[in-house]
Image 1 (cartoon, rainbow over the protein chains, first blue to last red):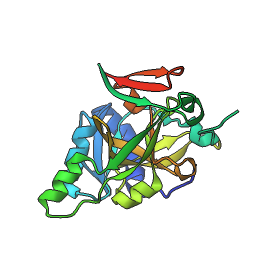
Image 2 (image 1 turned 135 degrees about the vertical axis):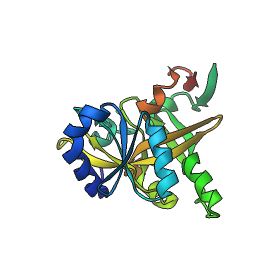
Image 3 (image 1 turned 45 degrees about the vertical axis):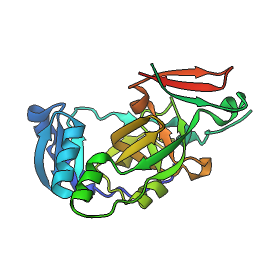
Length: 87
Length: 144
């Protein structure tokens, strides 16, 4: 997979620094973050996104579900480059 | 009830090409409405082919689509790679298939250009549907 630059480093670092504290208050909720500020928490990703668009339009903002262990997404076909492989 | 069918011709093409379907990728509706209210122009949808990938836990769009739609990231996710987990940006997008429109708050960006597709339809989308892979007939059916 071609690497792209991860741009929300400040928000990600802030989230990770606050995660243990937020697990007590916001477990399984979605937090909306801009810079190093928690804007609000939401019960769905869709609601968090709508609020982010309302506040910031088409600018980067950060949404993350507050969970103890983050799920790792998997796309084996891209990792292995086997899309359209034929025998 | 079937809501979307893709017939590959000849049927053997389904095996060699995989379950591909025409797709348009656009800004999500929430963003289109906001930009319209602000009197701003929205980039036109990007057309191409999508591959249905039951092995992918999350859907993806090509990096060129992100650039053309001027999408900005709204999150970061951990993606497994051969070298271990790595961070990737998450983007909002709208997938438009014939008779089917799906707004997604979170798809990853990936270089899909070597495969001549602009999107991967992963299990985040498929979890909403019944999918029938009819190999002998060369047909894919999505139903609710």
